[in-house]
Amino acid sequence: MPSLTLPSPEPAPPGRIATIDTVRGVAVMGILFLNILSFALPEAAYVSPRAYGLDGPADRFAYYTVLILFDGKMRGLFSFLFGASLLLVVDRAEVGGRDPAAVHYARMFWLFVLGLAHAALLWRGDILAHYALVGSVAFAFRHLSVGRLLTFGIACAAIDALLMGSIPLSYLAMQAGDGADAARGLRDFQNAFGIPAPAIIARELALFRSGYGAILADNIAQIPDILSDTLIIGFETLAYMLFGMAALRSGMLDGRWPRRRLWRWAVGGMGLGLIGYGAIALWISTRNLDLFAIVAGPIALATPFRAIMIPGWAATILLLAAKNGPIARHFAAAGRMALSNYLATSIVMCCIFYGWGFGQFGHWSRASLYLPVVAMCAAMPLWSPWWLARYRYGPFEWLWRSLARRQWQPMRNTSPVRTRRIDANDTQ
Image (cartoon, rainbow, N blue to C red; front, side):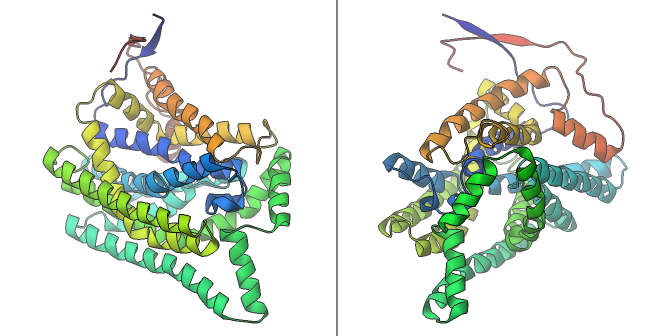
């Protein structure tokens, strides 16, 4: 049988928690199941499947599957892990005699810069600048107990639920109103959450099938809106960061929880989340994915189930990764390079779909988009250990670390590259 030689993923370096890297590796792959819609389809299709690309039963199946399993959960899992990593960095800074505030805010400043560059030069769906802003606030909560972290996190999640709940209420109020303002508001709702006017779709298709200059100009023009979105979704992100900080402090993420406790969270979180999302999916299907179903279901009603399902996802991954076998180590390598993998995804997908690349924007159905998603998700745990066998950091992790520390960091590994042969019948 044919065989393939691959780097054997190394154990986590000193100071790293392999389980956190494994969960992060799953999150960086899973988030592409949502982000692909922004890379490849007009903006409204991210929220409303009827806006574009819903051509048949396979597209509906893809929509409901991603809604139930991934929608909001992977971004939330990233936020969860960001909060935990924040604590690890500042705790180690304090132990090492460095100013934790100086270390943290230098990291957030340069993450913000990288995020703005990503949003302007590549893809306006960037989340890094948002994380830098919210992470700057989360630092103030670093000394709180687990109970207080959970309390503030629940309060932020409740505020987010109220904000999201106001969207369908506003829509109903506009439906009940009359006059030019109500009509204008309903058109705005239709363009954002329903089926946009043909002119809006045509403009987006023309833009993203055009050259780099036009897309760059539009990306730069969108940056103020990207930053202002922090006021809307920032409470949700902060909630999940605080939950992640609590998860680290409690021992969930560093291996101190017994398996029985992880099982309770995995079964409870995933079970309740799947039941809730399944019910929402069933309800919106009975309304044929109309505008009100979208704003009331995935946007508003799903908020508490998403918050429950994120730690359920984390507990499930931790259980599967407990033995730290080859598969878990490959995923952990992808997690160690999460920033590089996230940005590499933007480079690859923009090249496939934008006009300066292969110009495939708007040409694929929703279901067919998951072919490049699966390919990219398969590539991450393969190329990441290959890279880390040769270099200490992913390329963008190295850049971020060097900028934050104001000194170029050593890049190459001094130890020899270890490889192992993966045979076609290797089941591990």
